[in-house]
Length: 196
Image (cartoon, rainbow, N blue to C red; front, side, top):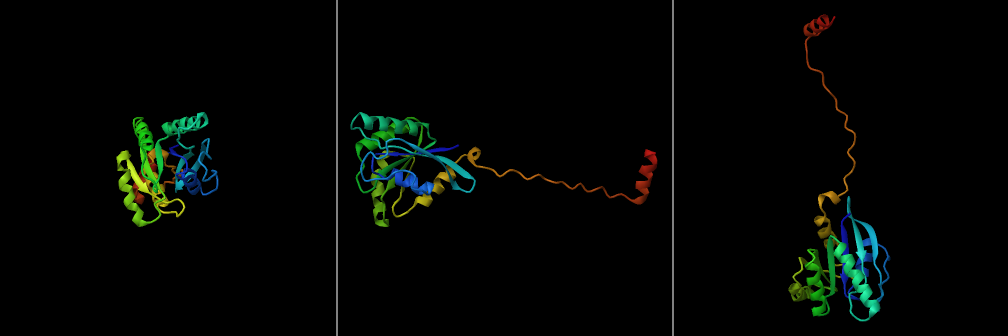
């Protein structure tokens, strides 16, 4: 099944996006950095007959041994995914560390979509220009808390799914009606006599 990993620094809204997509308070969210220390995986139907494995990861941060382990696990999950949603906080300027992580993932030949969270209104869309230096495959501004563009994000993912990951309904048994050839009575009786 197609794997989608949500990665990024702490407190950018990864677990909130995960919860929004799975439609449940599945991942713990908090303003405190480092709340998510492990990863969560869920099978999710994002569109009719289109399922993915969605992965929520801990924050990418170099701080101490624990945070380094969380970061390493998040990068491992990202490297095993088919699509990486790299989330950033749109209310902050891009930082070199985030750019470094994205470039590292791009070197693994991963499809990277930059998801700029906290783009709460149309005026804030202008901030998206600041993120083109990441060189991600695509950029989308969303607001998880205001549910802006989250449906569009799911549509993007659904369109990205390869045909083999689309669940096909089982073909119904076909009943074929074979119409007999039109023949005259004379021909019918002639063939019957020949068989006798």
